[in-house]
Image (tube, rainbow, N blue to C red; front, side):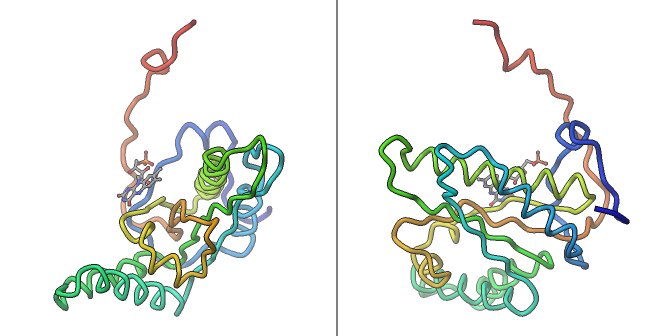
Amino acid sequence: MRGFFEMNALEALFTRNSVPRLGEPEPAPEQLENICRAALRAADHAMLRPWRFLVVRGESRGRLGGLFVEAALASTPDMDQQQQDRLQAKTSRAPMIIIVIASHVEHPKVPAIEQDLSAGAAAQNMLNAAHAQGVGAMWRTGSMAYHPRVMKGLGLAANEKIIGFLYLGAIVGKRKNLRPEDPAEYFREW
Ligand SMILES: Cc1cc2nc3c(=O)[nH]c(=O)nc-3n(C[C@H](O)[C@H](O)[C@H](O)COP(=O)(O)O)c2cc1C
């Protein structure tokens, strides 16, 4: 990768943080390629590759927002127009959304939970790769990630689930101060 900001791996891991306010432009092709490649280096028991990803950008974000509204109306038919507009607008919060999907594979030694974890690790690798390149990112779920109408509209099969919506774009506003963390709080010798 040349021509773009790039961070040392440990520095990126130590400083990654979510960016809720994202703007144009979407990640450059080289940056996106790096984010996608990072996903595919997630730990993966038996190399099942139990994941797939949908990239939503441009006009497609409006279609995704429409799907959210349709799903929400199916559950809550009396939702008012303002609530619908708010939900519709959620997918325009960033120039790009990558939907991380766990695709479970039948395997005698690898239960579905491990495959979910692999897809989650892929998502985290993507966040790290985004941050390392100065691309803002945030992992979101919410009720829409688990709504059957959304899953159907996105073409998920019975063996699939949404692990997260990764919002990606340019960082808008100030970076937040990171909370100092003490490993000794969570790690003990045993
Ligand atoms: C599976 C998952 C789902 C999440 N869903 C949301 C969400 O819907 N909305 C939200 O504000 N934060 C959500 N978060 C949390 C943010 O992505 C973020 O990790 C959190 O705000 C902490 O900030 P940091 O990543 O900068 O430490 C989710 C995190 C995970 C791991």
